Image (cartoon, rainbow, N blue to C red):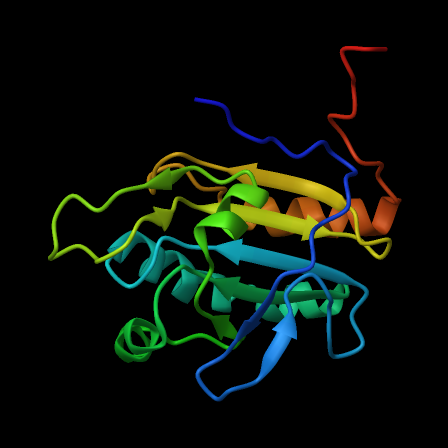
Length: 178
């Protein structure tokens, strides 16, 4: 088994997805006058930890707005699955659906098969978080192979505030060819 791993500072791929309202957008491009983008990949409606994480993340959106970071979330769920999931979500950022297996692979995500038909009906991405800077490159990358390992939101947002204020460089750029 081989997997792709983003290099820190690599360009983030262009991935266009739709919201329930039919708006389509390139997830890598910030809106609303922001110059950085946060893309959250979540497992889908079947994951109660994802629901809790997204709802908690909504409380941090004002601080992200203050430091110029736009926020979106996406899963491999279908439109119908996202519609059902919204009954348990209270978020203030756009949710997108339909992330394909090829797109999941292109993001270097871990991918799981459902344990049963009651969980979901398709392979799904495990959690991923990408911070894309004004140059369209990855400033911060966090991926996990299970739903129990996610960044602490206060530490994440405080760290992003510090990075933005202090023009902190992209870390993890060491190459084995160096």
